[in-house]
Image (cartoon, rainbow, N blue to C red; front, side):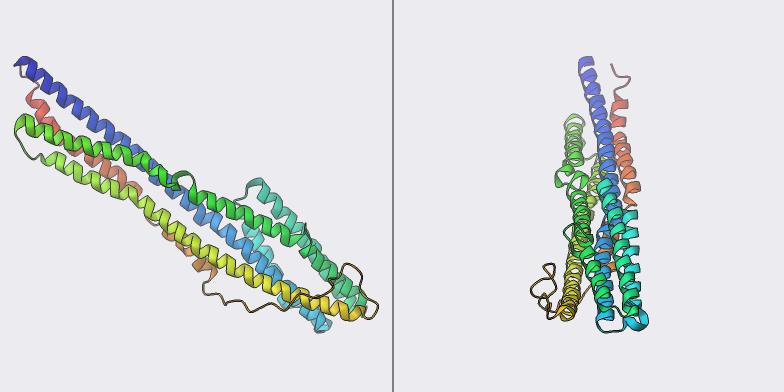
Length: 357
């Protein structure tokens, strides 16, 4: 009888240790997983996604500024307003977008270098535009067109502003893709908390069956309650998967918006190039303009679809992906509840054998 009592007590103590130990592991991994997911999504919401949007917006604003300047000079409005108020406003918007992109920079030192280089190239561009304004007012047609041409080349050259903007956009996009697919947003990382949670649930079921066989009590309220809380805990932690899905849905909206913005910017760019090339050709005739001028002007761009979303819409979804931060409080509470109810279910049986011999 003494040996049986000793064995039963030892088994109960081992079950208690196993339940409490696994609960600690589940608590640690669940909090770590959910907190890390929230941290990554917070970075995407606050920095990476806005940086992607800022670079796209900067390109669109710069192309609008360039078109406004070309139209002002070609149509003769520069006599009164120079490159024009629209040019000044859009260029300022582009610079503000790039300043925000610098603050949100997700491209590391390479991204910072690109941003500094783009800022310098924009200074060169605006310098050529100022020179074009001066020469236009002086009535030196050939000189102001030359200035406009060099301003355009500072945008479109292989190592010039637009090329670096596209390189920067690629860096920001790559970082966003990595954040949304690697680390704690990788589907396989769910095993870090799911495996110990499953083991804990199996141990709870085993403990319930052990008490039933050993003491003849079919139900143990404490262990049933612990199992129910564990199910809630698993559900709360699994909400991180829901948040990841929201982030991917938001990324699809952002990608579509950026793509449409880029299409419209390219159409505006083509219009500006076409207008400038036609103006330069007219000024050069009949002697020709040299090898740097394309043989033919770009074809008139086709109409692009109107925007169906705003910049705010493009990033709003990332806020929805971080609106369950209160679960970081609930998860530990549920885990402590599991541990407490497991003790409530086991401790009375352990106490029964404390003084038996």
